[in-house]
Image (cartoon, rainbow, N blue to C red; front, side):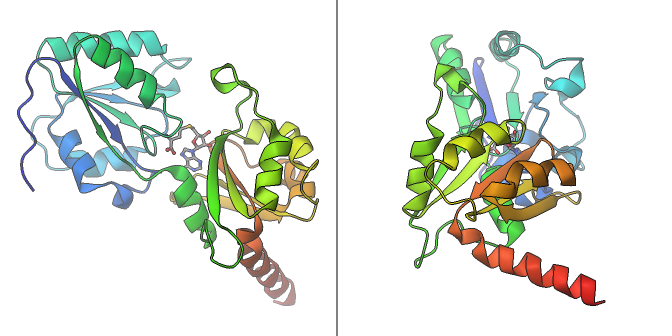
Length: 265
Ligand code: SAH
């Protein structure tokens, strides 16, 4: 691997830490983390990722927890950006480590814009987004030649960026064979379900995967009609990905078989 270029004053990296399993870090992410002198770490970044990426490094970077772990509430975005700009201008190699991919619902886009506007060079390093890890955790593909011709990555968070999504339209897209991968949707499951049920049958397969790729991963495979009740009963909370679509039929069959085997045992 070529070494990363030496940092000129005014440079920082937005790095995707992947879904949690350190083996899913990219080589480029590890390289960026190891050369950091200041490391700003988001909530969703697992401790295992930091341990692996910094293993054997003689001088540890200054680590700033900018998620909820660092204080009682998440650090305000404007404060984080000011900190990054200040440190980068002092010549520090500033790495902002984000869960999954920095450009998938990670506010990486806004951050990159603000930093560049302040004259800071920004390099972005992809990470494996949790939606991909969730599907793999269930053992299902997101596309399938027979019944899924595309994927929609969508936020379930109400009014993200001021826009209220039309879930009936998204349901219609799923009915055409597009798999829905919903981030930040657990707390809103009932609202999303109500919209989707306007265009999708209640028996449409639906699943949730919490802590995808981590040892504590938990998943449920159910139907759209049963989704909110199943999440409540099984105590599935954030961070979790919801998946809706026919690609889950294989996973549903698997879950039923496992259930039958458990009952037979
Ligand atoms: N940039 C991140 C997404 C940040 S938004 C990425 O690419 O994955 C935060 C949401 O991501 C959470 O509410 C949850 O829906 C999802 N998420 C992040 N890590 C997760 C994980 N390990 N398992 C399941 N969902 C996860």
